[in-house]
Amino acid sequence: MLAADITGRKFTAMRAFVLRRVLAAIPLLLGASLLIFLVFAFTPGDFIDGNINLTAQRAAELKALYGLDQPWWLRYLHWLEKLLHGDLGFSMQYQIPVTELLGQYVFNSFLLASVSMVLYWGIALLTGVLAAVQPYSLFDRLLTLAVFAAMSFPVFFLCLLLIKWAAVDLGWLPVGGMLATGSDTRGWAYVHEVAIHMVLPVITLVMLQAGGLTRYFRASMFEALAMDFVRTARAKGLKERTVIFKHALRNALLPMIALAGFELPALFSGAIITEKLFNWPGVGHVHIDTLAARDYPVLMAFTLFLAALTILGNLMADIVYACVDPRIRLR
Amino acid sequence: MRFFSSKMRQRQDIALAASLTPMRQALRRLRHNRAAMSALIFLLLLIAVCLAGPWFSSWQLDTTNALQSRQAPSMDHWLGTDFLGRDVLTRLMYAGRISLTVGLISVVLSVALGFVAGALSGYCGGWIDSLIMRVADLLMTIPSLPLLIALGALLSELKIEPEIRIYMVMLMLSLIGWPGLARMVRGQILSLRERDFMLATEVLGLSLRRRLFGHLLPNTVPILLVVATTGVAGAILGEASLSYLGLGVVPPTPSWGNMMDSANSFIDFKRRPWLWMPPGMAIFLTVIAINVLGDGMRDALDPKS
Image 1 (cartoon, rainbow over the protein chains, first blue to last red):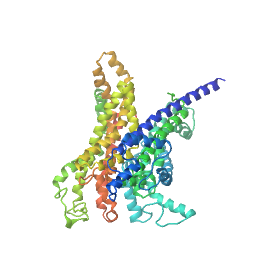
Image 2 (cartoon, rainbow over the protein chains, first blue to last red):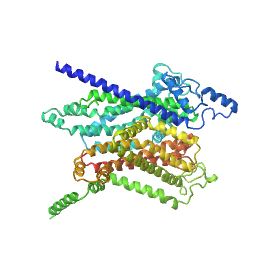
Image 3 (cartoon, helix red, strand yellow):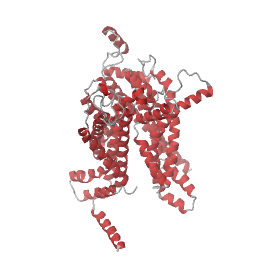
Image 4 (cartoon, helix red, strand yellow):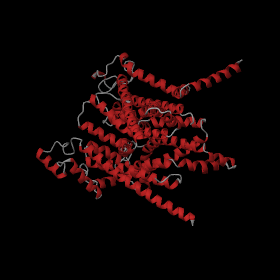
């Protein structure tokens, strides 16, 4: 009876908490859309100015057609209205709607990001926990060194080194792209071909991300192992394995939820520089290409898409955290 | 005898530690951290080479020599020459000045901004706090690389002079950096405000100014120093990525990032690694040294961990 009452109250509090967080996210999203719009609206020059073949008259006609001759606030409201109807705009370079463009490339980005993410979370969890269990051991020291090295690589330099050694000099792996030029493989041969092309970009992403994450895992686990409940568990005579994996690790994983929330945008946004250097047909690559062509509708939509994913990721992390950790006060 | 002397030294150490301020104790701990000290020495050497090196070089920054373009490293040109026959090592040292300066100044800017904003927010509370934190939230919502890329494109479209552009790049990087710092300073102030020593300053009847500038804010400095140090590493990486994409520091001003642009030509990439490997290694080594130093500072300031 009492237990049911407490659960009910907790549920109501939880619902109010979620609702409050969702409502707080809306002005943030609106603010982000305004900021993004302003950056691009006040960038002089656009897709039409970049085309030197147009006469002044034709350029003016096109500008009127795309609504580029209106004042900025009117264009913002118009853009916002279309966004609310699920219309992200029209790519001037590709001449297709932005949603279609995103749809074509987002899966490739997701494929690359999800494979790397599984790998680097796994590696970071394993090495971080091992290092925390034996702090200041040889393994811990070597790991710290490796982590610093991995964290300090400029993305593009790492990509270039990998391409140079593994692809150009040794010729083990393809230089870039997702498929060999003119390839028409099907079935398992296709999977194999994509997998081979993924090796280098995945290594890059894993190296870049695993470093920082390992440190978080180590610190979090280190802190958990110093807690009183761990001493209690040991005093009870539990096996060390049980103490570490069942008692300490579960608590050490809690703060990682917030970090997992930050990963949401990375999952779909494409690793811009890595995709560009490995010529991977993902949204990050499209992002850089459309920048060169001043295809602002695409850039604006992508950037807003990223901002929305960031807000959503944080929101989800907050809610999951509140569900998992009963110590969190629902404010 | 030896036993006594070591015991006495230990006692002296303890007495010394008790008489030193926390900041000096931290410095002592830092001096005993071999990795951090090596990193610091490496950085100082690097700065010295970048500052003084060009004076000893027999080549000028912009002297072109069409007859000696794209030469492999030799006794004359230690790191070879680029497509205009310019000495790569000399350019590397000049680029180091630019890259290090951009990293340092942008962090100084974002620390100043973040400190003031965070302190105002944490101390004043109320609507000032809400306003500042919402702006910080907003800036943190947009992932930094796309935002930097958009701002870099804006600079290119405005056709800003390369000399002035360097300062704009610094501003851009600090715009990305300050919200995180402001949040951290605010959090520090909120937690420090509740500590006993702040209560003591109130009980002692100190003026608001002394409580704020004499006791509250100085206590946020150590953690700020650590974050600023690693921030320099982040800013150098940010500038390098941006310049590599042609959106940060642009030629003729050399920076480590834009020197690596030569890797975009496949022949240079494959056959002439001396054009793009040295700047890449320079960025890598600088950033790793800064990170190790920052980590050592964190350990020194927080002996508990």
